[in-house]
Image (tube, rainbow, N blue to C red; front, side, top):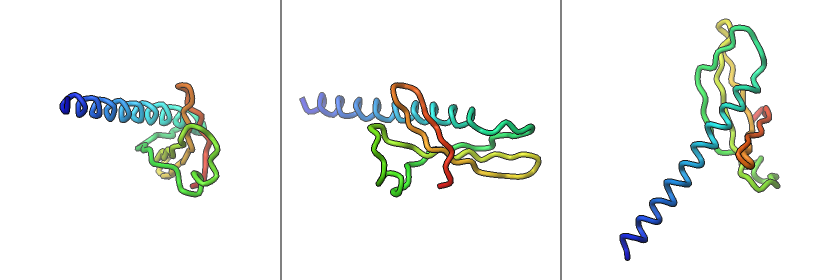
Length: 99
């Protein structure tokens, strides 16, 4: 019985992590599509991170927001574009932010 409980707990953890990974990939894809259309713009690196406490304090939505950072280069000029992302019903909504 104990091994069954451990197996169920492990499966729940894996499913939870899997859904977070899928949400992260969905958010990164949506944020990449939202980048400005600049000739020669190349995404060098992307990452997800938790939303800041300031955003979470005023957040009223049911889904937990995630921050997406896209490091881009255009003609030798490096920049980071940051987006706030929320996944609801399998779709990602992204909005550029300055955090």
